Length: 388
Ligand SMILES: *Cc1c(COP(=O)(O)O)cnc(C)c1O
Image (tube, rainbow, N blue to C red):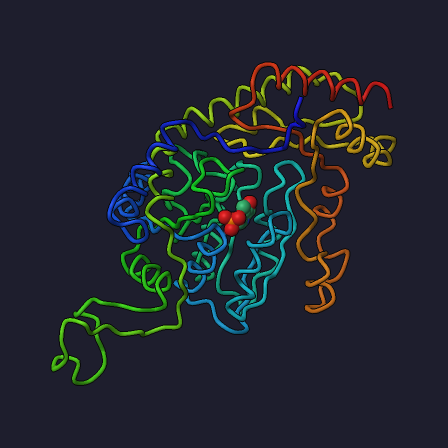
């Protein structure tokens, strides 16, 4: 049997057919599928606008640019996330400020956010860790009170629900960003998107996606542009080439149709794990009652007994030798050498996050897992814990 990774894409012949159809058409780069995916995504999330880009990382970067994050601005985010959630602030010359997590949900703690707000704070980037939505109502209340932007890093959470709305509806935020990397809810190979309800932000996102260029005559600013011809366009900001291709979006449109089924399958597997492992001593499993609305991006087992904590490497090695590629998500971002050595962040900054990192262990969870895969993971995890 092939080793089972922690995450894996779910492409079927329809997805592949959609890509081939686009590749055989006249336009393969900037074509009609991009708008179609944007419309489908906006409709799915019930947001007014969606903009598709080349990755989840570029989605975060253009969102920060559209939000106007500048040199020396402070932006508050979670330490338990992929590095892109805070790197996007660095790209804009800003300073990421890490607010510690809630022990239970592993999401950023609104009380910790409040303590970190200063006169320089310009935005909050909450991350829906493992697909479980953050406490957006409290985060939005803090943001309103302090005049801050909220950009949800929803890379784990496409398909998740919060308070009766889909994540990405931006009912509690200015923008939400998604990733279409193969381990995420749906994939376009590489890809990402931003949703928003603000026309102004939408137009800025479009501009930053394409070098800061506009072709909209009503927005031209140079004097005398009227005397030039139809070739004329203006670069008004320093943007990037963060465009996605039409054939990637064709894949995305096809994938999006299956999103709710993917999430349902993830949830079914997660709840089976919960039932199968609830009597293993010294571990903690994701609480079912607190997992409502989760997109179940990853399944994290937490080692809570000191005996197990000291054996984490053995557990991971044993699982890997048995064909289960266990992983850890994530090292607190500020503990990466770049953040410590170059930017000067120090160990001890977020004690809950550091403790969580010691405890956490990700095991495979993805819609394409067969019943046989699921049973194998259940049996093998149990065996490893029982024979340590
Ligand atoms: C995957 C991910 C990203 C970045 O997405 P890419 O498409 O890989 O660039 C950003 N934030 C989080 C939380 C992620 O998991």
